[in-house]
Image (cartoon, rainbow, N blue to C red; front, side, top):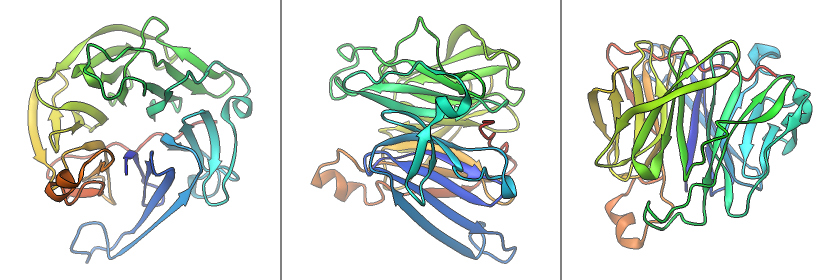
Length: 312
């Protein structure tokens, strides 16, 4: 229904994502095989778990067997807060308490947590969405949602305290971890911040990209520091240089509402793209037969960066 938060697990060759409105966490296992014609390998196996409440985004945890933390392998930003989670058993525990700190996240009425990723140091950042005005024009859509960071030893803290968002999206970081990107989707803007890798301080906000068509959703960064952005409502992914220059546009067939991207695969050269079918009427579903699907395309001459894991 609303696939989002896609993330590649390079240690175990797995693709993870959430279906927000479907209240599902999904995993696609990709067995590496040099003879696989699709570039993903010969063996693909997908599974999903009903987690009873809406998950906005997720990250794998550091440690444990083969890099996976025992007990609760994921940290998930559910609509009602941050939790360590094992989707296979349905078990979850409040992440702030497990991380040894306070929990400053409070779910306001008609809001939920939305897009999030880890910084290069393993802190998990996530912002929210105001659902009350979701069907109204941007000038009537009130900014009410905050941005939060989950960190070992500090729990969940409010960050960017002077900013509130209508729909926060596009969390990603430059290869050196010193630049953070984030989108205010309804306003068609992506911002760039200075980010201190040692402290997590975020300063010096300025416009990275201002768009005229499409709405910037989930994003990721490649080894060259270029930003890949899923463009909601126009069925494509765009690649921008670190200076904000549009370098490439990839159309996504039969799905206008592209939602998030990740670069993975055995050689970190496959772009994964999620999409949504929620909210489409019967005519739109006929026009978008692939709405809600997950897509993959091999990139020539482009490499992704292994996704950081939550250190906690």
